[in-house]
Length: 246
Image (cartoon, rainbow, N blue to C red; front, side):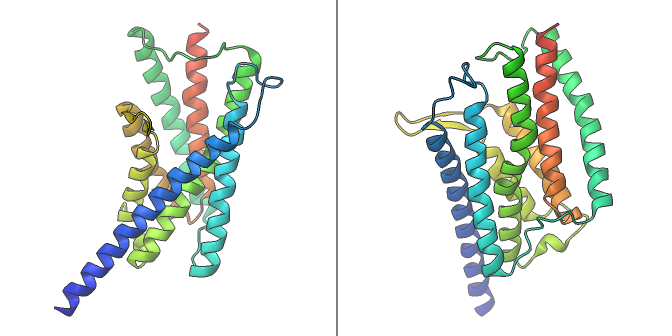
């Protein structure tokens, strides 16, 4: 009986922590949007293509990093901000990037054949192409991997008893973190209430989350998932630009 009660307590605690992390992630995204909307970018970004995104992701990077540093001290938890197993990490980045390059090319060939290439709200001039690709390369990986990988995977593992020590399997904390990352890609509003999921993007984000989480746990470093994330975004966006210019 005592074991059942203890199991229930741990289950409720785990569920509560998941909910808290989800709320924190969503609040961080909203804070990034609110702060980025406070500025005008007309001089450097007249088409509103990238400058606001730079500010938005800088904000969530800072918020996530501050919480990670605080929790690292309070919980004595290792969020793996160093380089970890560099040999294994470089191998992850190289293989992932090569596979994504092939997938990106195949996806865009299919889009070209089906007349479904992406449409952008800004002209593809030099300023916008360089600005958006720079944003994807420099900030998407660092900001999003701190908020959606290092933070949840480490916290969930801590609460569950550090199941992250399992090296060969995809751990529960990795799956949950990938699911939260996928949910973050749903566009929704409160007033009026609306939810607009892009199912392709949700599946892609979930798969990317699983792979990045596996790399994070195997290499004991968030650096390599950051690189994988940024390079995958550059490949996808850059290949789209290339095909639209043909």
